[in-house]
Amino acid sequence: MMAGMASRFNQLRRTAVSRMASLGTSAALAILLVSAALAQTPPQSIPPPPQQSQQEPLDTFKVDVSVVNIFFNVKDKHGALLPGLTKDDFEVKEDGVLQKIKYFSAETNLPLTLGILIDTSGSQQNVLPMEQQVGGEFLKQVLRQKDMAFVINFDVNVELVQDFTNSSRELARALNSVRINTGGASTGVPGMGGGPIPTSGNGPRGTALYDAVFLASDEKLAREVGRKAMIILTDGEDIGSKLKIQDAIEAAQKSDTICYVLLIADRGFYGGFGYSGDREMRKLTEETGGRTIDVGSRADKLQQAFDQISAELRSQYNIGYSPINQKRDGKFRQLELHAKSGKIQARKGYYAPKS
Image (cartoon, rainbow, N blue to C red; front, side):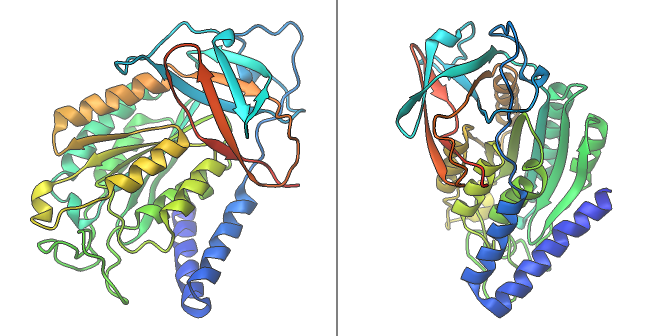
């Protein structure tokens, strides 16, 4: 099954490149976005169960009425998680219109679907072993019996190296199996196979970061329900993706996936060139309800970042509501979530289903 999915990833990329060559950039982009729309699943739908309590888990409900679910964290001014809040502490607005909260739960134990995306371009040569070791330990810590995860690596290509499994051992093995790939270019010169200088023509593309986020969202996470998150280990530099950052953000939003980015950069690789991938990564995480954590090339900071993400994923609040606007027009709906105290970390909106 994993080999088949890996083949589908490679086939999708080859098809996109082929069509782009014959149709032009805008036409090929339209092809990929149509693929995303077809894979999009509508928000979960559930009728109100009899005598439902605030803490009743959403996975016990039946499917019937359209419901929007928001998974989020609340933090104090020092960034510490705020537990113990109730339904009455929150209000939610969609496109500026106040909505009635129907379902609420705190510290949810709903199953988690997790995607691990790891950068294997040339710029990660010196930090990849650290990512593999700490990432494997994180998976052992965070995954529970009902959780599922997959692993994708990206460089000049995007490859699914481990399909959905709840085995932290298999996931760690997949992480340890990835290798740096520069498409035949030397890693000694910034920009060749992962550095900050874009390649051109038919040469090595470098780091297909945006394409990887799009494919993980559209091909894997869009078909899943419940709590979904993506953790991306990268320096944030994209070199040669066929898609743009906004396409990646839109795909993540359509799949209702929270994105976390761990900025891992070997400063020595860049020399005097510098890099600026953090700006686009912060845009991705803020729009989807996650965050960007800069860990440099230090293993202790990477471990701390993973610990923070684990705590956030296990301390989420969940609000569900039936939107007043029931139009199935596929348009983006702006979300505003407010708490009586604390700062909310949540996605900025969602895409309505299409008829």
